[in-house]
Image (cartoon, rainbow, N blue to C red; front, side, top):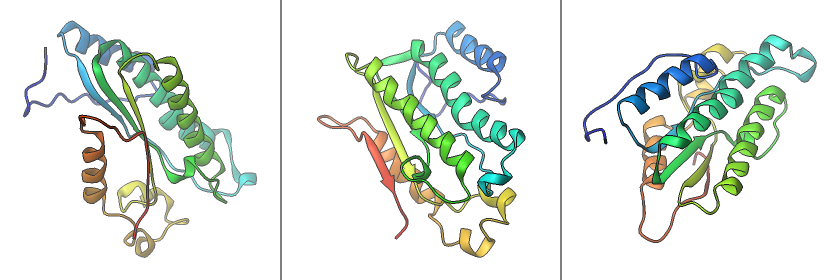
Length: 187
């Protein structure tokens, strides 16, 4: 069963909560849904000096990014269409380390490692795995981190609608190619 072009299914919950993830995908399976495209885009940023990290900060960042991505993706794999695509929106912090972003960089590198391992595990399939590494985006993500990124600085970051359009265009099935990795920076 496929969702019609204008049909949307919405579920609210914590993707690092295994019970919620199981519930979500059991609902999809019971209703005969197949997943054509999965876009992982959850994350929490907590920015501080390495000596200021706490278990609370580390847990918040890792649960949203790494644990949530692994749980959602692992649960989605059995429902993926044969030529499906899994795109994970990470950050340029997954390709380079940044001062005052130790927990965040660790989480993003964890997501990247997971995606690389999936590529190897599914290399004989026709599933596509896309890693997206955007720089700063002007969203509410920064609201909890004004000590790190001011409103004025965030306003100079990438436009989220333009970024989403660019990512969607890359995800669309092409006849003879697909985008494997994308590093996207502001002009």
